[in-house]
Image 1 (cartoon, rainbow, N blue to C red):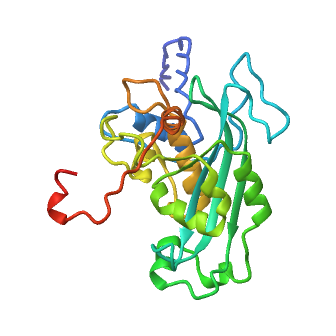
Image 2 (spheres, rainbow, N blue to C red):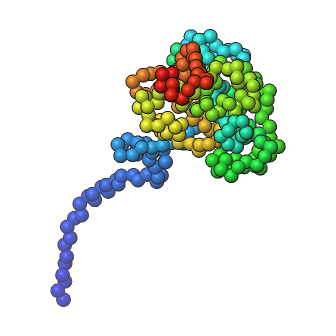
Image 3 (spheres, rainbow, N blue to C red):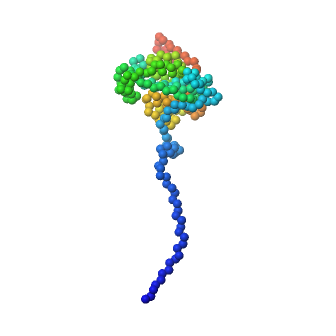
Length: 274
């Protein structure tokens, strides 16, 4: 029988296994995705406004005083407030929610510093809240029933403030002065009317729009979050060409004398001459 033989090539060294690039087992976080979108010109990212309750130490060389009733020299104590009401007429409608933020502001830079004193409270208007007011504010009768604003706490915060600020103070001021006469003796500034937002490049002077210009959104028409939004907007420079903050502009505006002239009993046709 013939025997067949087979020859095989001697096997060479095995090729090393190429390492595959490691794949991340974790999906990108929402913040990473937001940062990626923000780097492209085709997207704008809005983040939920986070309230600031402490703006950090005072600018050197001054330091904050321990006594909250005594502002630091070179600084002004600003009270930012907002109200929610049963309607638009201060003669007949009532406050149902009041929020206030009290903070020291460096006059030179217009920047806030130190802790923020907070106040928020409901008040029962003594009558049903109209349906349209409930729809706007989200506040219903059950939320305010039996509540009353703390007069002593409000009066104490107002007493320590150098300036009261509201966005559309022409609305809020008559309401709080009717409820708390101590507001009538204070200097006021209106962040809606006393700052030329259009000249600063803002598309709208509405608070929610100003917040969006800085990349924030928030649930509007609740007093405290409106106050936080306003304070943070005013803590930023107004426009790109001037470094002055909104707070700085309002402090300067409040220091200027103002006069109101009224012509009573004059005929209508004389209005242009007047």
